[in-house]
Length: 126
Image (cartoon, rainbow, N blue to C red):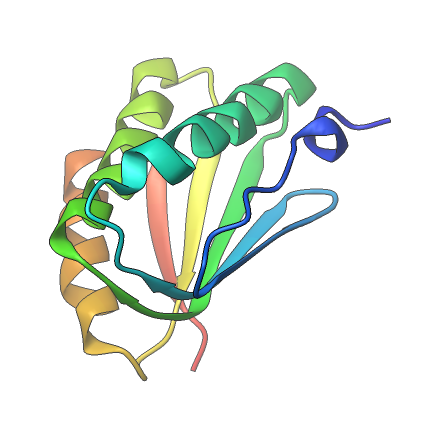
């Protein structure tokens, strides 16, 4: 059994979260909570730790259906990028799948990849 399979999926209003084995996390909907780290921070850290434990070379974060996040939520993705960067060059590559449908994704994730150049990549799927 994969370590990813053992992680409890958080239930958050207006958000869908799914782990797709072997190496993808899909997040859709909206993150508007004032303190999203309380709702999702531990979950994302558990996913990261499982990816490291599984020794995966790459992991995908699919946000193509994530319509909106508030400014506090960007911190969740910055934290993840910093965890991946801290492992370089022996960790995994985080590939973030985005869409042009939601303009916030381009501006936010470009900044995140600059923080963790070589460790985090953006792939626009449309």
